[in-house]
Length: 273
Image 1 (cartoon, rainbow, N blue to C red):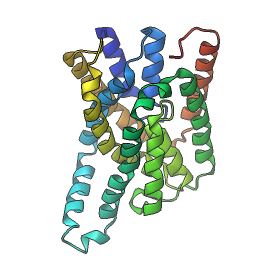
Image 2: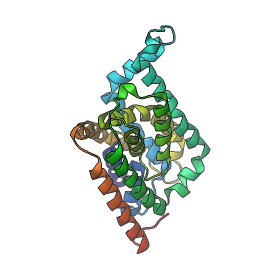
Image 3: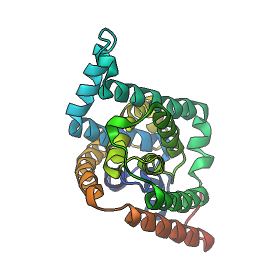
């Protein structure tokens, strides 16, 4: 893997990880279009360590509060009645689906799921679903009031991101809006929910990323650092954006990208595998 590819893919990862447009799809498309290669699911998972490190830094206070509250709840009944204690458990429970499905379908995720015909289709279909959720979602529930039922559903929504083109944030934001959460609430929750699963996936696939003609250790480190820096800026921008704007711009972008990719595949301008 060349240094240019490493830096470009790090930038792409940082720019797209938190937007509901699918970072894995963009990594796959950019690699196929400009480098005639596939960086692999392992590279995607490990580069996400950079963007999730950005989440930990940005939400350090929130994450620390949830962690401390969760620990205190084991010995303090009053703490167990708080919103933070329930939210901490919801993050843990919501991580289980993507962990189990990621292990069970590891081979499929790394092979057939990365076919660009499938990526194009999921970009369009889940873009339309995101638009419908924005249009018809009531958007009344704050992050503190997410119920157990909603938490489980959001966990499975996040797990759909194992398929490139769905988007981790896109899946949870779509489900959250459909369940009645406010836009800022579900965006913030999607960041918190992603933290444990992404770090686990990155560490789990770390040995695979250096196989064959993949990146060297120093190249992977650079990709992670680039993703971290750009990802941190993306978090700040997205949280501010959703305060007063709908997600229709992402809906339009997903559909346009999906249609363009289908056209490129149809004329043979890009290889599906």
